[in-house]
Amino acid sequence: MTKAFIQTLAISAFLILASNVKAQSDYIISQKGDSISCTISTPFLSKIDRYKTDANSKTTKINPDEVKRYYRADRNKLYYSVYKTGKDKPEFMPVIEHGKINLFEVVETSYSSGGMMHMTTTSSTTYWYVSKGADTVKELKTSGLFWLGKSKQNRKDILGDMVKDNKTIYDQYVAEDKFSFKQIRKLVHLYNTGEPLKED
Image 1 (spheres, one colour):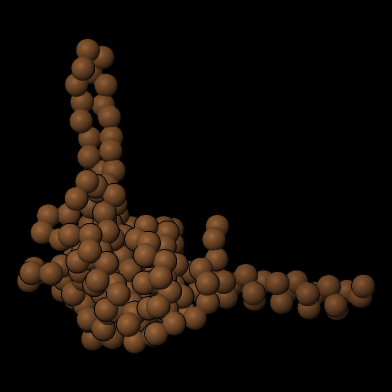
Image 2 (image 1 turned 30 degrees about the horizontal axis):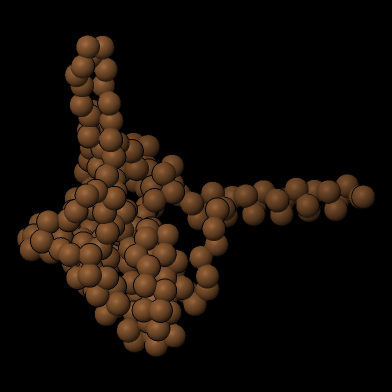
């Protein structure tokens, strides 16, 4: 290989790498629709993410009243500002499938201690929410024992109504009659993209 070819190859590899890094960098989108490239972090002993537009700027709290969505590259997660049904204040939720139908996942971890050894135990409960054409989310599925006020059939019907405008997918949903986390995500992904979900 010639020296010029090797240099060209090295430059091309650098440009590809640089574009990938840029594509995966942090950003926020304001409620007005402005996209802002930034660096996002969570201060010690805080649950609220903050962002900086450059090294010399001060950190600013990411507020769901002001930010429509944001992306954290270190977590590879996209967060939407949404309203839970019946709530008048928005909150951020991580989205796991987005498109015409948005599917959100919230994991709550609880800690308890006790017993003779005073050991601390942890347990996690997963909650999935769904929205279509709105920033209000509806309860869809939980790994907990139950969801107050929402029967399983009621929640199955919510998803069924959302995919009803695609007869093929709706008929598949009814025929399979499954409501597992895996089946829900596969269905929403297929509805949004027209492609089967690629499994890890």
